[in-house]
Amino acid sequence: MQRRKFSREFKLEAVRLIKDRGVAVAQAARDLDLHENVLRKWVRELSTDPHHAFPGHGQMKPEQQEIDRLRKEVAKLKAERDILKNCHGPCPACAP
Image (cartoon, rainbow, N blue to C red):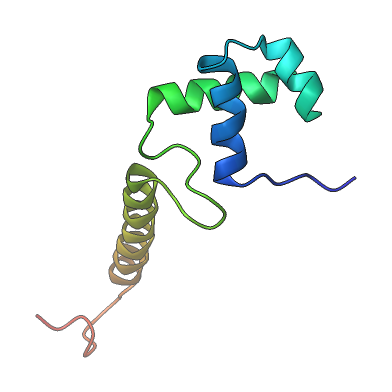
């Protein structure tokens, strides 16, 4: 079974059903053919960070972009460290 994907607009409208119109989560989930936990998660995400909620496929929140950048930098620095660790004598790469 393939995982369903929902647009940001769909998620916002689903949350508005609950928040603005007062529809119960269980009823909204049935009407939209969703699991209640999915809908609750969307409500929580939107209330936690309204501007960056539901960034979309292939897009990351700013803090996630920073984490990704730092992970790449750590990997690069570890590789450089390992190269220097394994250097056993004078070579052009090891010269000061």
